[in-house]
Length: 535
Image 1 (cartoon, rainbow, N blue to C red):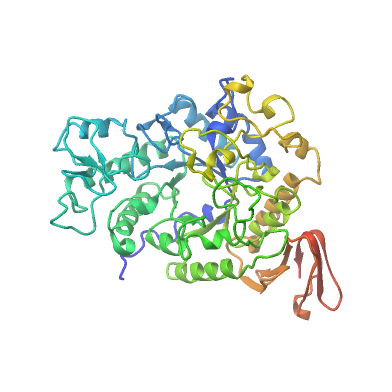
Image 2 (image 1 turned 90 degrees about the horizontal axis):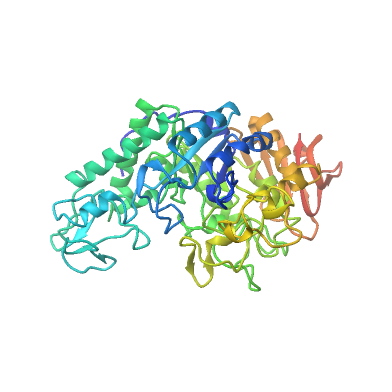
């Protein structure tokens, strides 16, 4: 397939060196005691993020919403949700963050709205309105009209999320609702997308993570028209807001970055094997953790039953795909996110976490830390459905959305509200980790993560710019960064050894726990160990 040239192929430089931190705002910090996190609470915690070494935060949707899907059902793109604060308070947050050297990225729900959005209410009453996809007959996946308009609409996810009409790549006379991409409705929606981005960029945000980024143009083989749309948006950004970025929720950087995005996440879905790459690392894909854990072998498993081969192969495929447009974008490796179980879940709640971070923060992807993973916050099973968190009998996302644990006091320092008014309950475990305790303990996971971030920022060869040579994909994992730094990671409980070539024998340990080398080049890695050496 021939693609149009990538607009501004280099893009802004800052994402290449970013350490991204995802925040679920309703669970991060509550400033007014109503039990829900807000902009002011987040602003008050910026010092912590700067101390940790974070350079960009991504906020899940903070627009006005009925919150039937935790804000991914937008009622007004141009107004913040009252629970978080006003538009002006978001602007104050972005200003304060920038003074700490931290950029703010918003979540953009581009493919659908809430069924309470004024656009949809108008469309449900007017047969001439084509902002959404309407059928004059019952069709698979369509939902009956709630308004005076006869017919059925197409949702994007839940029924309360009607899909915006960006057109169909292929028409079919038997399905007259398939409008072309240049019809009036699709043109209006593309214009509204630019209007939304322009307003928030003017308020000081630095870009957007796009929810369900591949879902806009329907029936689009090879995502040809979807890619054309996003390259159009990137061209507009490059001209009007050259320092801003677009990140995709696509799950396959090899496909999405050439479509126009500055970055995309390895996810538990998407790409070859439907998310097999991320699941092969830490299988925190979906659902309630029980005695069947892990549901499949993963490398970061205490029993040592996994392999890095799947991930390394996916990484090489991604590198090869991005080589066609050097500097155009990056693969992002998350610890977790709001849709999948935390890094600390099942039996992986202690000693394996530091080796996992040692890997994530020295691999040439952009690291994304999900809030609280840096202290080992745990997935909390058994919670009630909250704002659409339950997607199946074994899939409740609420367990990864519990309040940030700031200290050992009431409500873990998240809020002064009564416990029964909190957005979600805090982790009830007596030994739950918290920031204050770990910040006071230089041997804690939090300090390990902070030191690894500082090491990455001090040595560009450990970031996205440095070369990668994988020396061993078994236990321990051994790889070379920038021809100068040797990384060793052993996340299983049993010790492991590896024989280095003499030219790879390290000289200095920059950070090490349980790893040493003999003069003959044999690496000895104790259980749950990690190290970064300089050659």
